[in-house]
Length: 299
Image 1 (cartoon, helix red, strand yellow):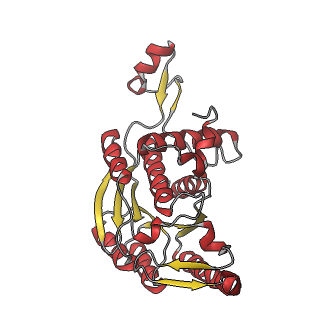
Image 2: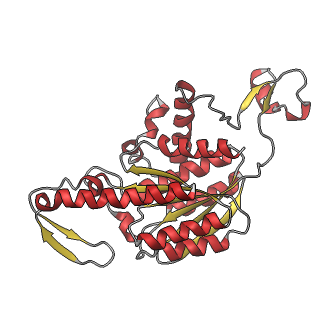
């Protein structure tokens, strides 16, 4: 294992890990290490961690296990669950299985990201839940905050393979209907579906007073279209195939992708939802910062 835990923020390092719980722990430890080294440290973000006992602190908050190891008194910053309930909404459709050479699949990247967010949320004493979807919601765990529940959630992510076709809009509506108490909704998806339907579903979350972060996950080649001379393209959900010369359509493809992304950016901005664009080579701390920044604005 690398001595520098910040290396686990790099997706290519994650390829070497097979256990989702270990992966999440190492990513979050690397993130916290990097946060303390960076200018982001102290931007109204505090972790559920220990600090040295100060006169006036309640004795019942002393961590006696730490005292037994160090002979010093430390208290936990957070002892009780916060009021924040978070919902990780993960795309498990077959389009998420795509991976260009040398990259994580979008599915593995998104699941690793969701696992790391869940681990960080529980560390913050926030309740976290999980919804999986393809054509419909295929799995749902309501928000809770306990280590045992986190392990159950991580086991679910471990086995959440992309298998179904995509109906993002209707699936998100189903998730919105299940949320009875408003909270923070984090959608993790390639969003490769009818934009009007997806945007309408995002409005459903906001109509119910939820805070929303959209984490738009793409493969680098889906953005650049930097393929070779001629290529065969296969739809992962319908198996439809087409042969073309990428260089002949690269510019028009890139313009279309830029318009596609810009539309989501614009609509999220108007909804006052956070939009985070990333590809599968983006370090995980980008998404973790986005969560903490949103969280800090809610308190």
